Length: 145
Image (tube, rainbow, N blue to C red):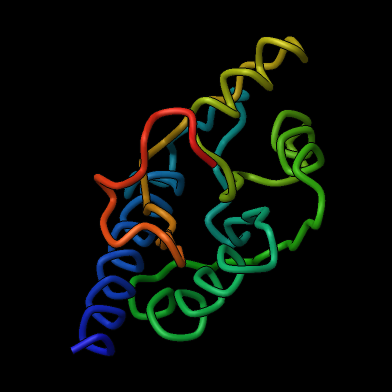
C-alpha cells in the first residue's frame, strides 16, 4: 500500500512538473518571443536550476523518461545553495529554478529587489511527525516542540 502511495505521488509530481516546465518553454509558434524581447531558440534546452534532492532527482526522471517524447530538451543544473538558483534565474543564466516555496521567493524578491515569479505549483514535500509521547496529532498542543 505504501509503495502504491509513493508511486502515485511520484506520478502526480512528474505530471505537474512536466506541465509546469512545458509552460516555461516556448509556444508552438517559432516566431514567438521570450520575456527579454528576444526570439525563443527551440534548439536550446530548457535549463532548470535545482537542489540535488529531491528536485534534481525529479527533474532527471523527467529528463530521462518523459521529456524526449514531449519534445522537451531539458538540462538540469544542481545548486547546493538556496540563493544562487534565484540569482542565476534573475540574471538569465538559467531559464527557471525548482526548489522553493512562494513565501521564500517573496522574501527573496523583497530583500534583493528581484522580480522572479512562480510559474506553477508542482509538489509538496512529504512530511512525517514522530513522537514517543504523542499518539495523535491532537495530542500536540500549541507551542510544544
